Length: 571
Image (cartoon, rainbow, N blue to C red; front, side):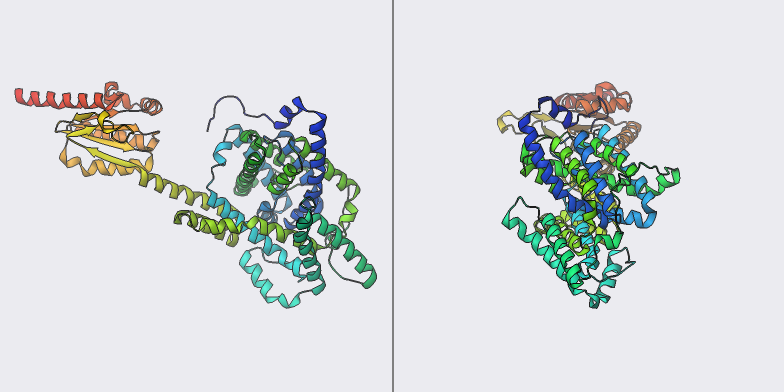
């Protein structure tokens, strides 16, 4: 993490256009058209499932998709609404309304931009994998639960928001299953599953929507089939480009919606960088993670002014772009233009799409998101990984994504710190010290130093942070009764030291000096020494007591013991 230097904002589109040619344009046009067609049913489905209209889903895909491609740090990333946001968006709308969602999305965009400006892109990529798996699987199950009503045609209204209550209502009303609606859903599901087996280039979701919508429209006219469509649910939708509108950004709103904004930002950052990493593995390119975060942030700052929902990188659409030949951000721009043309000229046809068909699309999305094979694999990992994944999953399902991410991250940090503490050793030496112990040198190259009685050597092997500082302090107190004349703290394997460790070290030095015990530090790395000097430790013990090598430290300590012995003999 680096907070200094120039802003790391270098959109891939700008560099791609410098060496652009007709061959690349042809490939990007084909890929962009295909991705636009694939994104259409998903944008509609995600919009409806999130608690907004299909129009808003499409507007988000158009504006967000364009901005992610224009300002992002990955050459093939396709942005738009995704299944991961359904749960959090639905919850925000239920509690705070559409204006609350706009404020949360706008703030999330600002957070993402700041993360990119402060060069946190690399750090976000190291979010523990069990957390990602846990909340992704939790989101998948939650999305599935939101589609039961439309999939089975139960006709329920005002469903509870929480998972357990919702399923309680479902179980009490399964006798209300509408067979024609269930038939439409199953037919759609079958088409989505079978289409890739016929041709991998045909988008199963789009084929299901086209074929099932046509069949339902014919049967409605010929035999009076009654299946709920988008038009029945939302009315005829306007094809006008939505006007820019504002929203109230007050301190009350900021305080109220900041946790939700943080969740949107974290989820967007994780999903977009995960998608970018997968894309890099296929294309051999390299994502500028900080630029990608800034690009995602700009998209999320913009879409709320058009009524849009949160935007992030979409793995499935990005992979569709790659497999169809897209290699520059121009393909993502084309995909946004294709969606815009569909929105302007074909939107009236969307009214005829059955809700059960969209439910089938989202059932498949939730299955693909679940990653059940990965979950099975993690159960063979250490128990700490399993516990993080299970806790994150349960919190996502039973409570909400905000709590799941916050507690999941906290649990992962605690378990990580425990592992570091367990692996950080504090060794005590007296009488003799092997200088090269713990290195790869063979025994013939080892140098053994004689340590006089009255000198104790403590070696810290690992980061010297607050957890280890407490452990070190307890060890010091347990040996304080022996009252050595010199304590050497060997720090050759300490990569960094934090403020708690500095504080404990200062207390140790002051208490030792009161007892007439000298403290000598040895093998201090340059960055650690700089921290010690900045904290005034060099002035406290004397700059000469911070030694570059253990041999110098032992020589100094032995000399102090001999000098003390001579003083006592002279007295």
